[in-house]
Image 1 (spheres, rainbow, N blue to C red):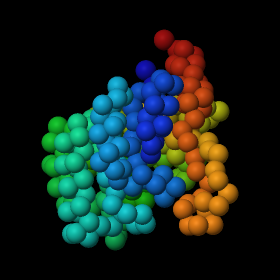
Image 2: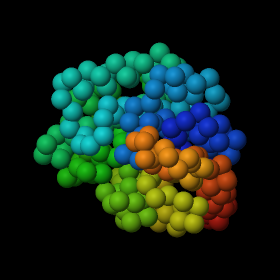
Image 3: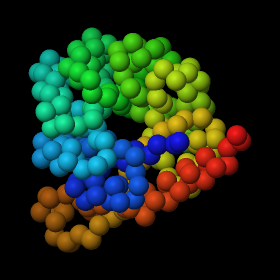
Image 4: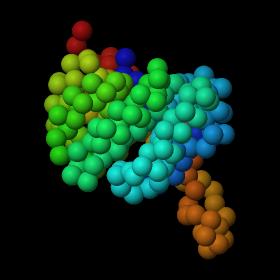
Length: 243
């Protein structure tokens, strides 16, 4: 079965994903900058809901090169996710030479204990994704969230197919970025991936003065109809596969 993961940043998103039939949640703050570590409150809320949830561990926006102080914060956030009872965490880190920061990721992976670990799209910025896939396996990661080193997963389908072939069931390739109901079928067919990741958001009603006062731009909410359409498209793809 193709599993559908939805990234969310609010309790509304958690409830929308659950009602629409998603398989798993990625918890974030600030999705507009690629996702940051969510609040403890959101972690606890998600842990009490039916869907398994993984928390993004990213202390700030910008590069994925983290110093020792930021690494300490990330470790503490992993402990917070464990204490909240979440299924896992989503993390990644780079060195200045655009290789994964193996030393830091091994330390953070150890801090995860028996939680699931997803290697996030810092992977897409690495020089050699095929070598880094082998590292991710050796470091105990459950899956890799990747767009195939392109801005969107449909654009990176060729690379995703190669990663899926190399993985050989040793690690899950989770295709994400730009995944929608109208492109997920060819993406799955071209790559063979068994998990997809999407945000499925839509604009919310806003008060015009909010942005002028510096409170943020147009707000968005998780769209349960978009999630249902995405899931329906994946199910149709499964039914169309040869037995």
